[in-house]
Image (cartoon, rainbow, N blue to C red; front, side, top):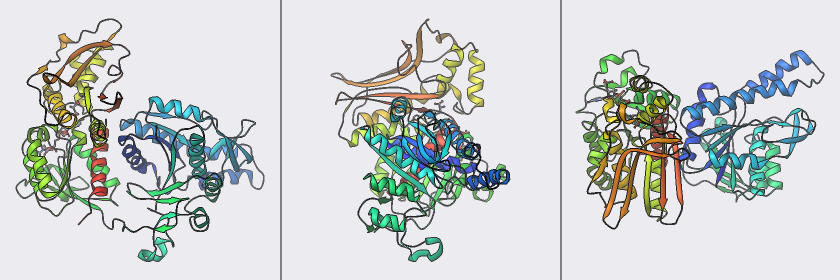
Length: 561
Ligand code: NDP
Ligand code: HSE
């Protein structure tokens, strides 16, 4: 298990509306198979406000209630971050400082951590991908809350990483800041003449990196031989404190990624909302919809067009396809790729129908073809298969619950709702396809399975795939068992076999554990390993998370023109 202990402070969490940016950062690591511990401090300005409020009551005296009051700032931001992450489909657990047994001694407002129950965190991470803990807050031996000094969440993160390493679990502390590196001068004051460091020895870091990083946290890491990463949101580089002192050679991104988007429906409108949150990094240049005249009140009203014929132009960095049906998405994807523009698509029907052409277009221009959101919504199944291929592993079998709507309906019917009510609810929640028969007759899962098997079993295609339907009458769940619509593909001596149909499984089967709109996959490898992937498979939040992750990844991977 490789754990990233990622700290989000007030410089990044400027307000509640910035929480989703932190979720995007966490999702980026989770989809790359990292386990994440998010250490969260209060929203910008909150700690000062709470200390002032305490001071207005206590004046010069010290109150035992002050740490309790101030700690509410961390509690609020951390609990909300956990909920926002869950909303995006990240399997999450919140833990208070008390639950992780973080003990500190010293002054009530400036204590130093002395012990933690690291096993609580490692045990949690066996079943979840993210644990969220409030930073800055601990308890003393008498069970009273204490604070770790200003900027103390940095110390929480560094201390947790050290404790995990001591327990034999590889962990790295990564402090996310509002600057993308430690610079030799303040870029806000001296502008472009400030030079970013790739690494800093602890001797240099202790002189230069304060106040970007808390002094106590640096001294603790230096004394304990730990390296600490300092990075900005969504960046592909960082400053390593405790490494070798060197300036970074590559220059940072100087302008936002310019994107063209097709679709502003259930998923598209959430994606556009998310782009507005990232306006420092993403600029929406144009949005194609069927009827642009309906969008006069949208904050991006001027960007809407219905002119598909003039939509493909190479003046953008990424084309984001959130349209429906094969055409015109397939033609647009191919057109953009041929023009050298990288793409990401949520539209599995379009990608599955034209995958060969799209791959050829991407190869000829060097642009990137990505479509993570097309399969699994926010469940990073495509990433897992790509990771297996990159590591040279062969997939020996693939099984998954790949449709959120039908899984949601099965669960609702099991809990006593009628089939029609459950389908209406799935439509209302934005899980279902525009024509929801596609969610029940194998059309949706068929496209997804095709995309997965092309990555898992390149060059092989099954002669026949057994396709089952979901009807009201088919949802009969034997007592003590689970029912799931399972897609399978596995090579045999007779070639690749595949099926997608309702299956009765043991109640404790991993796929039965996919609840509601969740998707899950089991990937068996020739190494004997089995990989498990989970996440929300449908809905605007997880799907836009995945589209955003692809978009920001393209910006990291492709040099922008
Ligand atoms: P919607 O039907 O809500 O939105 C589709 C959007 O595409 C609309 O804005 C529509 O324009 C636009 N559009 C459709 N056809 C055309 C066309 N010919 N020319 C121009 N614009 C067009 O769909 P969703 O947002 O729910 O889904 C979008 C895509 O994401 C689909 O491919 C779906 O399969 C996929 N997906 C959906 C998930 C979900 O949970 N819903 C999860 C993962 C993937 P207008 O608004 O003017 O009609
Ligand atoms: N309708 C699809 C589902 C959306 O329910 O899984 C996600 O692809």
